[in-house]
Image (cartoon, rainbow, N blue to C red; front, top):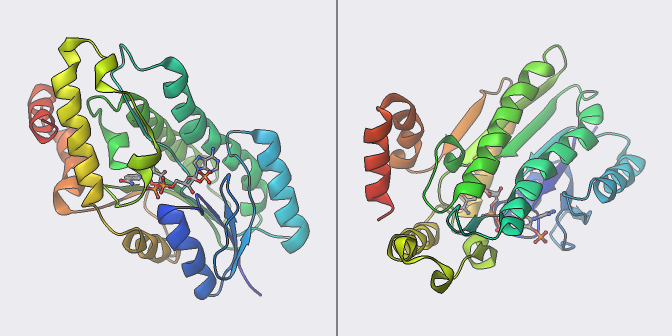
Amino acid sequence: MQYVALVTGASSGVGEALAPLLAQRGYKVFGMSRRSVDLPGVTSLPADISDADALNKAIERLIEETGRLDAVLHCAGIGGAGPVEQMPTERARRIMETNFWGSWNLCQATLPYLRKSDRGRLLLVGSIAGFMGIPFRSAYCASKAALKAMSDSLRMEVQGSNLEVTMVAPGDIATNSIATQYRQPVEDLDPLYRERYKKADDGMAANVDHGMDAAFVAEAMYQIMEKDQLKPYYAIGELLQRASVKASRLLPGHLWEKVLGKYYS
Ligand SMILES: NC(=O)c1ccc[n+]([C@@H]2O[C@H](COP(=O)([O-])OP(=O)(O)OC[C@H]3O[C@@H](n4cnc5c(N)ncnc54)[C@H](OP(=O)(O)O)[C@@H]3O)[C@@H](O)[C@H]2O)c1
């Protein structure tokens, strides 16, 4: 018997590294993204996760072919930058539509099958940014915080089934994500924001450039999914980034903001 895994975000970055890795380790793997994928051992299952009908149809196709779904590794997501006051609302909404509502759609489409598995696994990729606000990344942070809350609720809801749910929260990963996301041009902004926005955005781009390899994160996700019992979340990244999750909760708010402000200026 071969376990069946669905990897979203399979056309780039973490998902692109993870899908063939799971195939190599013995899973029957389907790779989902808006673009089709051509990866060793991976069946392409294109769909836009923010389009519930298209997503449901894709999952129906998968079930017709395999009759089961045991693991969902949800790596699809988008970022974006701009100040709350001036970032075009449709850009911010797009981030929520993909990162939160797309994840919601994915859960609704796949949970009935995951719950039937004798070893169901649902790994939702959030971000360390989902534990805090980062200047000029508000929509992204909000989308990942919402995903974290959904993951925590869901985890408790499915108790009594064989499904283990967790959120994987990486720090910076060296992928194309910055190059492909919307970043509001500095010239569009009020002078109040320009200089700090540019510094924060350049800093973010440099951090991502020097981030972890997607293959490293993919291997960590494989190790997590193979555990018998999953923790509510796993922070993956360099010590400073992992520690920031705890520090954001332990330090008094104004002190934490000073520390974070220094990091992004
Ligand atoms: N890179 C980082 O520094 C970093 C840090 C923390 C967390 N994360 C999170 O880690 C995950 C993977 O990031 P990454 O850096 O590997 O990203 P990436 O290289 O930009 O890849 C994103 C993937 O998501 C897919 N995708 C985007 N919108 C989609 C939609 N509406 N429907 C279906 N698929 C969609 C893209 O494929 P198509 O364009 O073909 O649809 C692509 O395969 C994301 O959730 C991201 O937020 C990334």
